[in-house]
Amino acid sequence: MSTISKILVALVALEHLYILYLEMFLWTKPAGLKAFGTTREIAESSKTLAANQGLYNGFLAAGLIWSVLHPDPAIGRQVAIFFLGCVIVAGVYGGITVKRSILMIQALPALIALLAVLLIAA
Image 1 (cartoon, rainbow, N blue to C red):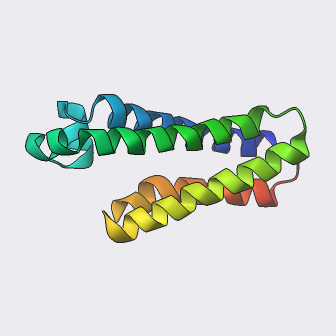
Image 2: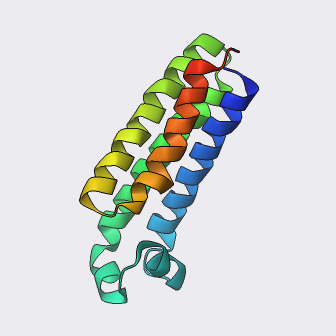
């Protein structure tokens, strides 16, 4: 992967680490309530579910980080394609079923990174 591709993939990974932090640790706090537009009551009743979602976002981030750090660039590229595809699917699904802004926040950065991985030579 090119340096630009690696930077874009790493940014998507960082975004998902931040989402993990919001969902696992700030879900019922003011920052989490604001980020997800929810109430304290709903957040309290769904905090276990949110923590589970956060864990899944952590797995996405881990895969993306793995792709950037893999010693074999060809394998790293394939791993990046897979995990970016997962992020895009999750973002599109979330945009359709939860909140349209998820398309811009989650799916679009992953799509841009995927295009860089596919189109920019190493």
